[in-house]
Each structure stands twice: as structure tokens, then as C-alpha cells.
View 1 (cartoon, rainbow, N blue to C red):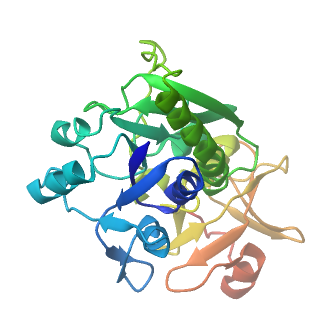
View 2: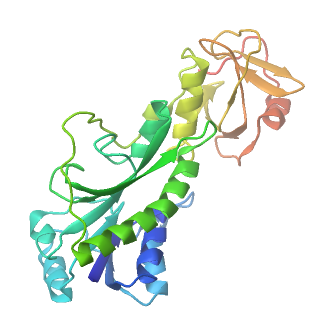
Length: 307
């Protein structure tokens, strides 16, 4: 089939590469416009744009995919199907109707669970044991279209959202190619999503990943893993923001929520149940460092707390 691929972040790049290596023809790529990124907020192209330019593909970067110029160019490209992975903008009906086989979305959850922008993060926060990826026919509703195929993936006890997304991006690329193969052969038919089991996964904001140290240790652990690497879980120490990396749940004697204890093993922080042991931390304006190195510098006292 003749394809126009839509995607923006790193997790979409494996699918683009897989499609370029497939029997299908990728004729162009749609991605979000160049945007500020990194600590210096330098304007940069998206990872998908960089990959597409490296492959010699035409790249379309509409501010909104309802723009007449974009719709005209998409129609001129005459795709049979538009595979999409984490594009980052709502696709209007005028664009959905252009390819004969529609837009086929690779979504990183077992639909109808975790519809929305942050399915992996919410699955980890909720304590799910298993997640996966689904390919479905894109509609104007939020991840509501009929499903072509699924794969499952275990959520490991130490998985961050970055770890899990990396595995799903690789496995999901194969699922997307297989889905398009099945559509091209006419052997694959999409099935409506069940009415039961719907859950929503909105994008996480920095406020969503501020650590509540009164929560049970395992909930603290899940929140921190879900927010790593983005948007970055954090707390406060001496009225300054401190980003915290993954922690380890312990069976050490209880500490008051947010209280700190430094021992030979590192830094313990109290929660609503047992303490957790800090991994890495990142003070404001400084690089990431090991928690024990940070503690040697700040020398937390008996009245210091994470808040």
C-alpha cells in the first residue's frame, strides 16, 4: 500500500523504520512543527522529522491538520492508508476521509483501557501487571475506533514509563506492519471495542507527579516510575524543588512521611507505610546525582523533610 506516516516523538521512530523496511511504500511523513526542546529551549525538529529527512522523505508540518494546504497536499499524495503513532494532534474528518483505508493508529494500551495521551504512565500508576499495544481505525472520538490487533507486555516491577514505552515502541512497530499487511490482503477486519473496561489516560502535568509522601510506599514507587523520565517526579527540600528518580521500597523501620535518614545504604525517606530508598536526585539548576552524594552535600538534619 501507498502510505503517509504520521508521528512525532521518539516512540514513533521504530514504526517509521519498520514501515520503510516493509513491502509498503512510505511516500511522505506528517509531524508536528519544530518546537523548543531541551534545557536551552532550542527550536528543534521532531525525532520523526529527523528520521524522515534522513530517509529522503517529504515532510509535512501543518500547525493544524485541518489547514486547506495540508489537506490538498495529502489528497495529491493519494495514500491508501495513513498509519499514525503518537502524532499529537486531532485529525479532522476531512483528513480521515482521504485515504481509502483510513488512518490506522498504534496506541500503547489494551483498548478500551487507558484511552488518551499517557496510557503507559497511567498503567504503571494504577499498578497494572500487564499492558500492551493496539492498532485501531482512527475516528474523531478519543481512541474509540474498532481494533485490528493487539499485543501484550508485562509491566516489570522496576519499569519506568520510559523503559516500558521503549519496549512497546519496538514490539508495536511489528504489530503495525502486520496490521497493514492484513488490511492490504483483505484478511484483517477491525472489531468494535467492548463497551466495558473503558479508562482514560490524560497527559500528566508536573502537578500530577509531585510526590505525596503520606501515600503508601508502593504508591509512591509507582508514581515516581510513571513520571520518569517525563514530566519528572519531584518534591521540595528546604523550599526548593528537587526531582527524584526511581526509589526502592524497603522493610526498614518506619519514618514519618517525608522524613530523611542517611545510613550506609544511602538515603531513606518516610512514607505512609515503610520507607523508600532514594535513587538519583536532581536539585534545581544542577545535574542528576546519586542520592548519597546529594545528602553528603546538604547534610539533612532531624527537622528536614521532603514536602
